[in-house]
Image 1: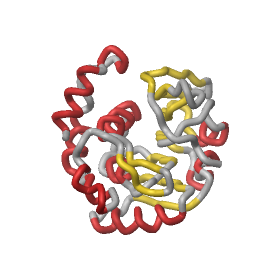
Image 2 (image 1 turned 135 degrees about the vertical axis):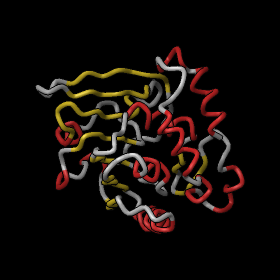
Image 3 (image 1 turned 60 degrees about the vertical axis):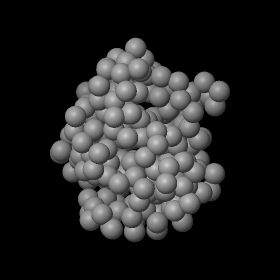
Amino acid sequence: MVDVIGIHADLSSDETGRSELDARVMAVMQEVPRHLFVPAPVASAAYEDMPLPIGFNKTISQPFMVALMTDLLDPQPHDRVLEVGTGLGYQTAILARLVAHVWTVEIVEEFVESAEKRLKHLGIENVSIRVGDGSRGWAEHAPYDKILVAAAAKDVPKALLAQLKPGGRLVMPLGPADDQRLSAVSKSADSATEIRAIMPVRFSELET
């Protein structure tokens, strides 16, 4: 799987600006067992570079997209990270191996219980999960060094920008449904924001 991610990264270098992803990210992609984060009927396809259905009209993102979004986030060992859209916890597990703590919000209650079990099975303890409207973030633990949103919106939700530290970074798909762009949002020391559109993507809409 990681070999395919590497090839995809090289082929996408004109759009992403980099021919290879961070070695730390690739190492974690190698370590975390993706088949444990998908429903049993599709587990045989877990290591294909493709999204897979996980129920409730949701999908787990393709491995390359997970790796790219993680790379763009630039996670550091001391970071406190907010994730919006836990799903069954795969992206959460990747982030948890790279940062100090992950707070993650999921609107589908059934996913939260399942994600907790899967993360516990792998001994991942630096994660806090709750059911809620991800567009509102998790204000009690803000500000966050980094925020990753696994769903699309036309604009960055104001609550998420407010919960991002000055100097922090947010990665999410932005734009209308027919013209989404994976985007990296930087927040300067004076709280000004700069948005860099990376590449066309197709994600489900952020539910509120």
